[in-house]
Length: 364
Image 1 (cartoon, helix red, strand yellow):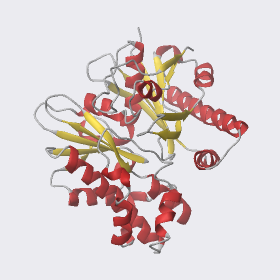
Image 2 (cartoon, rainbow, N blue to C red; image 1 turned 135 degrees about the vertical axis):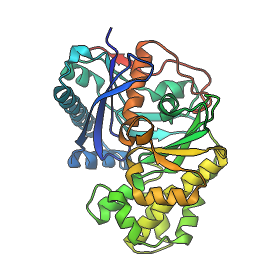
Image 3 (cartoon, rainbow, N blue to C red; image 1 turned 90 degrees about the horizontal axis):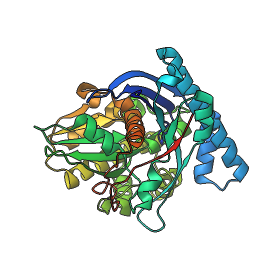
């Protein structure tokens, strides 16, 4: 039986479509190949429109077709470049693009745009997807799922660790030495910074935080941001890009007018301080903080986290897997667990009532 599993996702930042191939034959899975495809600009615009504006069923279906086609092409490129044939792959775990995530009140809702049928047929690979809704059906938040990967990859029996995944939204995993894991979304990651860069620089994101570094943090604006009720909530909790979105930001800027680079500096500080606050509140005994996700490459943000925390802050690159590929591992892992019909216990992370098998399968 093949133990090769593929993980693919876009992430809430929509900067790229990432796919990676892992071998699960040994206790420590091995990264075999990876590919990051640029996210099509027109598709990003359509998806942002779907997230924030009323839309028709035809618009939804066309966006789903285009996104699924992009996933299939990314996966095919990965396989061709690594000389792996579809029949060698046990399954691909694919997350899709989150358009809606409603948590904290009934009904719990989450919606990921994807057509697994289209991908499995085009690539000739079984697809495992739709991971979050089963957790919500069991009373969980449906997010974050990343702590499952963090626990598998980065737990230490001799050191209490915290792992911070900085995507469009940031999430935190607490990994004490006893082998347990807890986690929650801390708030904005790179999503607001990316949107602000796209609006004012016509760039997908603020490379290394260079633009944010030129601005001055507006403390009154920052304090207003941090008064948002989400930051005061206790875990389990999760949030989304449609909550911490441009309209949320622009509503606050109205009362605190400032120039674009100062807003970018303030958004960077918002991400850093909200992460630091969450770490200090929920994992104060952490001896080391590991960063992953695309936002971990923002050197200005990393500097601010290091200044705010009293422990080493490092990239996961030095601990077994490069920061950009940790979430691909997550969905490869979830596909593997689904194949084995292994239950996943998220009770201490999402607040679900019981362990359950996550995801659904679409055969090749």
